[in-house]
Image (cartoon, rainbow, N blue to C red; front, side):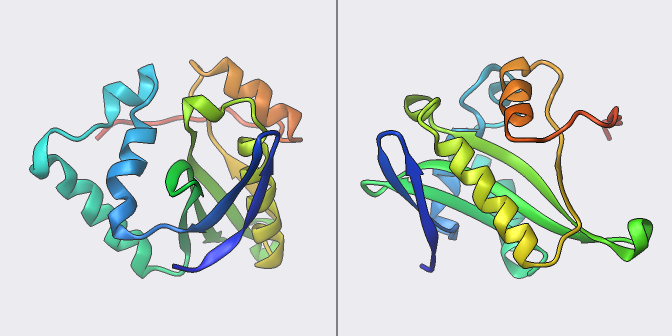
Length: 163
């Protein structure tokens, strides 16, 4: 497992590393640990893990995607996916897309989320991205305040079509 950095929190530090297949159950627990995530995510038996494992394999095999976890004391306490998207707009700019940011409930407001997003910004800059972007469900006003405090602006209206 390759360590990507150390994240400073108000309570200490967390080690950041690339996720491995064995982390998937812990990542899913983080994804499902709020009302919106509980409706969309979760594992019901071994078969319930299969779609997550398949998605992990696809992400892990593609250098354009980076799934990370933060650990303290051997426990996964945060996760985030960072994807790098080439495009023709903005003069052929590369952009970083942040997805699935989750911090364990015990460590929210500890600075871990901020440290995780600042690391993502640095990684996006290191890879030559022109911008870093994310979406956040309209039902997450606390998350919106958090992202705004980090300098993200609500510059667009997003649309989705469930398939």
